Image (cartoon, rainbow, N blue to C red; front, side, top):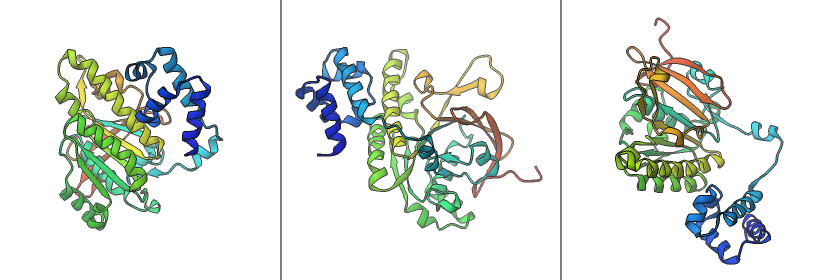
Length: 315
């Protein structure tokens, strides 16, 4: 018997949970159960709230691991964008084990950024990459192999070598998106995936859940998806989400004029929230809007045939 499984069973039995309920919990999957709320557990197992809280505390006790902070910090890799101004803004790049949300208006460069970091993740660590595979979940059919190849050629990279390490799935419905997200957890271990892209996060939800009556079910579904993606972060993958925007009436500057779609359910789930905004021509601005570990700030860059690049010195 797996040591963790044994520990969980012992903790549940010690807490007075019946063997029948324990069997039900393992059928659901302990990794799934540990992220549920007590009310969700009550609904799924038809148990009382007191038992649900008891179960969650017992399971949680086997997953709480206390270690020196130095151990946590020392082993975090960073995925570099390759533009000094952006990497400086991000404290050296996108940190391993974090969930990042990039939001912006249509044609602002969200998918371009997603494809750019997809290429970068395939590079060796000494080149600022992760030296891992990438799982690209595409909900809007925005992924372009031709664009990936173009970026590679203009950067002097072998397109075939890069593409061989990109695992792609089109997920046009919420059901397909959930299946892909669950599959991502297996791919981290089975295929060595270190970066998971979801482009774009809320597109299927906004198509399928329309009107005020559908708001609560939609928010609950988004919450469940985010729970799965956070599990990927616990496995040290970087999860990079693109998101659409909704307008705010009577606001002026970009961060106040628009906000990420999804409302309160996304809230502070991402470790890092970034805004991308289109400037004149091919120039873009990226801003740290919310982060638990970075200061607010912004950087300007450009998008050309090579992908995300520094702005021209003569700008």
